[in-house]
Image (cartoon, rainbow, N blue to C red; front, side, top):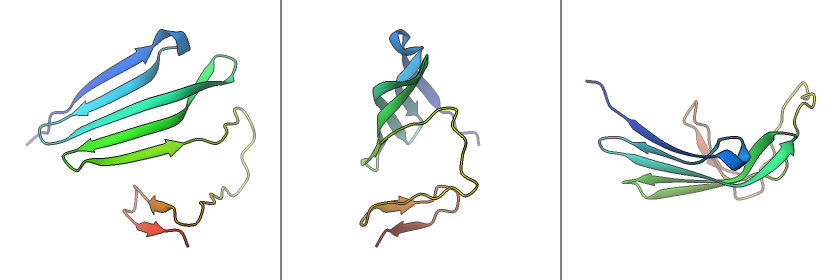
Length: 101
C-alpha cells in the first residue's frame, strides 16, 4: 500500500524564494515546518536562523536555533558538535536518543 503525502510550500520572493512554511499532509500525520528569522549569510544566500517543527497527532514541537553560519569556509577534518548540558539529542539515522550530561 502506498502512502500518499501532500506537500504545501510557501516561499518568499524577497529572500530568493526560500521556504517560509512547509506543510506535510498525510493520511494520519501532519507536520508543519516554519522557517523564521532568515539572515543573508553570504551575498544572495539566505539561511533560517530559527526553525519550528510541529507534528500531529503527537503534538510534538521542536525548535531549532542557529547561532552562526559560515559559507564557503573549509571544514575541519573531524566535525565535532558540542551540545549544552541537558540537551535532548535524537540521531534520526540510528534512532538513538539521549540527554547530554
